[in-house]
Length: 78
Image 1 (cartoon, rainbow, N blue to C red):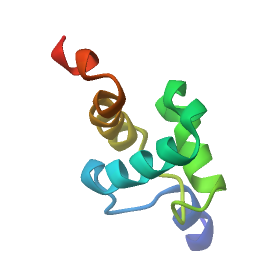
Image 2: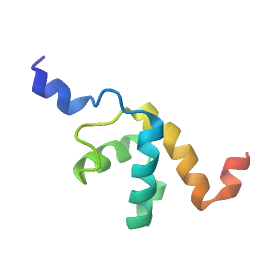
Image 3: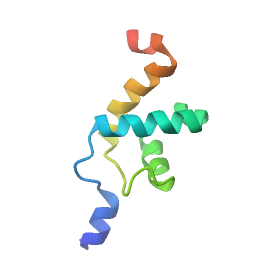
């Protein structure tokens, strides 16, 4: 696989802790994004230039669990 292509579709070294601030800012700017699934947020974060490449969907899912409790504290209690 071409190196530039691989870099575009895999942002290595990004962790859920780094994705969390991105999601919090995105949700404050675009509240309608709070209901999106991780795979949808993956492309949205890339399209809006929050990330240089597609982030790991697992990292997005982990950060999403925390970010959603910012807006609905009862969701984290379950």
